[in-house]
Length: 316
Image 1 (cartoon, one colour):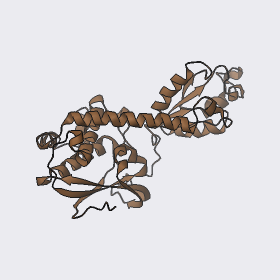
Image 2 (image 1 turned 135 degrees about the vertical axis):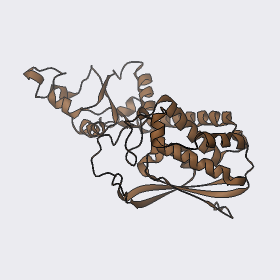
Image 3 (image 1 turned 90 degrees about the vertical axis):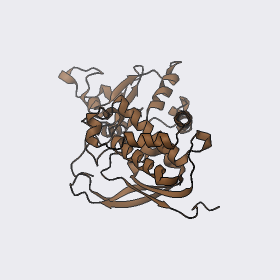
Image 4 (image 1 turned 180 degrees about the vertical axis):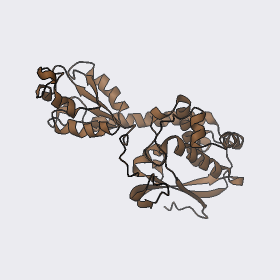
């Protein structure tokens, strides 16, 4: 990574924060000042005790004027919610679905009383995963991808660069410098987000598509795709989790000194897929990965390798 500290290193991370007093809010404050969107839940019926701590703005005691409270909650959003209200759980579940992380530092058992314990949260997230999988399946079936449609996709995105994606209205010019942070949704336009989703769906079909996804390819050879990603960027290709996943430490020396990594924590994905005559599938995989890299992953060099395999490595 760059030697310069990145204030927005956590841009795109969404945190639902139930913490109060000092230790918890201080921890989530660090997330917020580095770019995470932190939504803090607090009740007017039982406000944080730190709202009663000195010093006060202009020396006037008031729950909204505590400097001590303000310092521990810098850059956060505040959401007032009475957890004993009959509709509170419905609201919180919507926020949990939005969030990547949920934090709390209550007395043990408090979150469980609200049906927000670890098992409850995991169930909500599993429902989201199942829904996302179902939506992806609907989209990839609608593609009805075949040689002609893939060739059209390859021709349409034959020549593009980071700069052309900005000029053509897919990315905002304020997106993180290449080789640094993930490109969050807020740095993409609506059609940029649509193109990213389409590239991921086509990549999914190329790697895993068959008759059940209404994919029409006559696959003749087995190929092995090996892809290396920094661990903190691996969720960008969450549908690859069904493949072989390995951990690795890597070193990258950037000649421009933007993204030097020493013993970086990487994940290596390996997946077997079927190729067609003319290596059209492989070309499509490369084009999709290039789009995904320029629109989200944001590596200067995305390491991927494809090779022919005579026998499957999946041995029973």
